[in-house]
Amino acid sequence: MAIVSFALAVLGCFVTPAALGGVICGHIARSQLKRCDDKGASWALAGLILSYTLIVLALAGILIFGGAVAVMFSFMALTS
Image 1 (tube, rainbow, N blue to C red):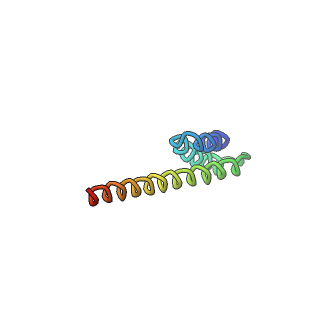
Image 2 (image 1 turned 90 degrees about the vertical axis):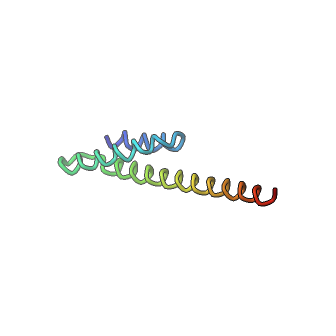
Image 3 (image 1 turned 120 degrees about the vertical axis):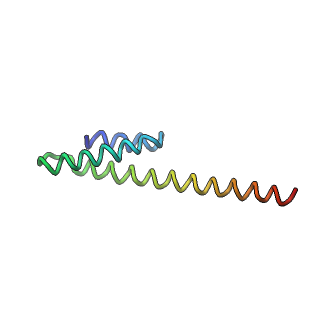
C-alpha cells in the first residue's frame, strides 16, 4: 500500500484526482505499518507529503484562476 500511495502521488502530478487516492492509500499503509513492523514507512510518508502538496497546489491554482476570471469579468462589466 505504501508503494501504491507513492505511485498514485506521482500519477497525481499528471492527473490531479489520483492524488486523493495517494492520500487514502498512504493513510491505510501507515496504519498497517503501525500494527506490524514492515518496511515502507518512508514510501507511505513520501506518498502522503506529495499527495497533500499536489492537492494544495491544485486548490490554490483553482482559486487564483477563479479570482482572475472574476476580476476579468467584473472589469469587462464596468467598462461596457
